[in-house]
Length: 203
Image (cartoon, rainbow, N blue to C red; front, side, top):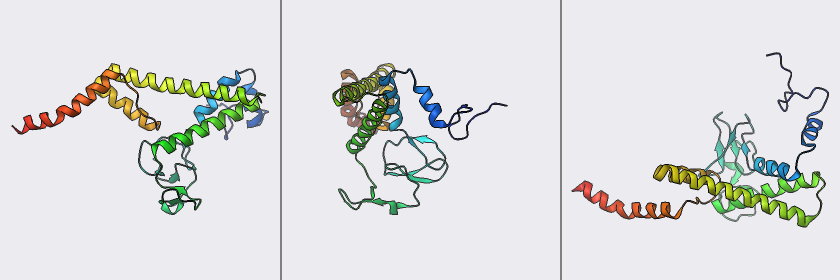
């Protein structure tokens, strides 16, 4: 296509290194916006073999990518088999845990987001710890509100199917699904009616 681009970052930055180009791109941008972008990127997992992004909703931390290669969901390293992991709970051997609870993954991801946002704010010259903490807290709250609005919209528009889509999205993001009260009641009614429906089918 006769277009020049960098094979490392896929951008056209003739005469500049990748780092110089990235710094130039951030000039004049709002530090809070840059921190939000960094926090969003921080929890994206990519295959270390082929670069494909992925998320997992359940299962162990041994990931097999579409490319067929294995990696660790926790540290992102290339692995060969289960020997990379420890399957004992609260072990201090230093290996990555084979199984991680939803709550633990939520904590790990939150720490990653906070660290990524803090690094960007410091690079932008914001050094007051109270100001940094306030910005990071507000960005976390905004992200939670966005997630909940997605849940509600999916549930209201799609009924039971919408609830299922919202639940799947929540699982991918390691958080509980948040839907309107009437959808939660409907789900409970469906569960209670299930034995009656089964009995009617048998009759």
